[in-house]
Length: 303
Image (cartoon, rainbow, N blue to C red; front, side, top):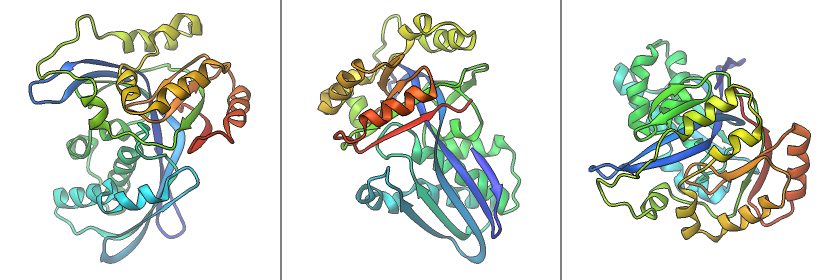
């Protein structure tokens, strides 16, 4: 997340994320699934701008070429940015004010964490812009109440998330990896993907856990792709494939491409390939553009 002053107010750039690995360890009695995941921020940003005004909170959102405008309009009334601003204002005992504009570039219903990153950006920016200056310890519970991935975006860098993914442990020394991200023309809802696993409440997966730590350790130590590639796995991908034929279609395409590793991110439907160099990422993106995808983006992790 990058926060800066502008001529008329403040600007924050909110990154996407990918899950380099995701294990489902079981399902808790309360119905939530227990996971272990390696989260890495990505150089693909939404932009949230704030212009001071004594008037009550005003919010607008505009799409870019990588976002489905109709889907954005459907979800505008429930935007996490507005919830985040109001929740922080209630916590601090102030009135939410100012003009807020969100420019969306991170595809929606994609497993890239765009809504969560936007919410975290709203918390960080309003905390500064409204002069609250609350410590991170007070922002954390507000973030967790907004969504599982929101706390991850409050602090920079990769992390391993456990429990529902909100309990975070920072990961040092992760290398920067060039990526190609492909978004099919069909999104996936997170609850539907988890339900497709078919886990009963209280179920446990024997032998699950530890994959993310091993992957982070090998990559951080500078080991070759041959050493860490087997740990790049998303246990939700098979469930997502039951719901959308696009997952298998993208996987087959990636099998034919010169990528180090590839898989779905989060609960989908975005799919990424890890490339050896930035040049290869650009070439691969160029080769994929013109296909039946909603968007194809060449980028990299930011660590």
